[in-house]
Length: 348
Image 1: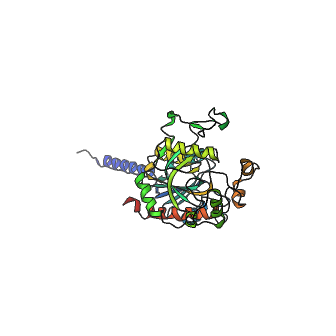
Image 2 (image 1 turned 90 degrees about the vertical axis):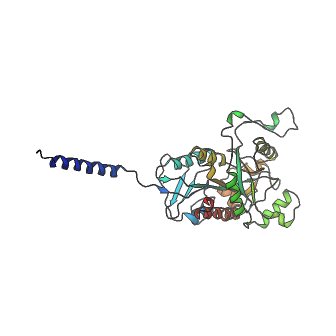
Image 3 (image 1 turned 180 degrees about the vertical axis):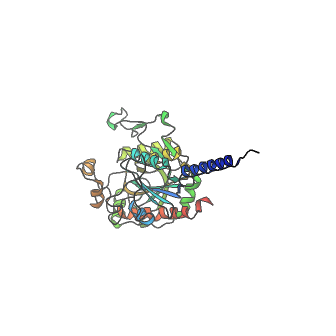
């Protein structure tokens, strides 16, 4: 009878080695994120000084968290993760390119599990003179790219009475506008629509003087639903206002144009690439208006170089004294939604 014990021992040893190698090569467990909060910029430090879009959210949800190292993150991007509550905070940098590249880098990372992640995009913007108050929070229900298409200078139009300076181009239709998840937006709106918002006496006075006499209660900011127009080129004035309304109408957005900003269409297009568009909620706080205030002109508003931080801290004609209260409004409404996500409200 042939002895087979050595063969069995060798086979057993081989199987143990294969098992060990499999254990060593197994992928590390990914960190599941419940929500990614996406402000676009910060002024100064992430905590303790004059707040930009990120600071108040960082202090509430990611306090003392160190910046994560993310492959291919552009220099404008910063990502913080609080593993205890499953919250990520992505500061993208301003503009469509920075926003799209930063979110693309994070969602491409193999360190995190995004299968149940909601995106809450937060920031500031310029409000429509037809609808908005300084300090309003706009729940964005659709976003359009203000830049895609063909723009002409008002002086070049043969029809001098025309205020439309934009001509559409249907070749961009796959990414020039996006509708957000209507059911998700409505649920979020019902949660925040009665949230009390801060304002200032100066802001109320400026609105009344520039946009006609209004009752006192009509000067209090509120949560509103509307369309966002995304433009890398910051504009202001009557022609831009009319063009923004025309673009929102052209794309058939459910709600009227309410706010101009610089990143939202990029956030939505990137989210769609990763199958996450239906889980995006967007909030924008109004810190200036799309019309010139106090008889300001392009020269008086932008004629001398001044950084954004200097503008908001010096209470200039654009931001007045509303910026910091508006950031508090953004946190108050945003935290209701974020806390709801963490509590599973949107999964019921």
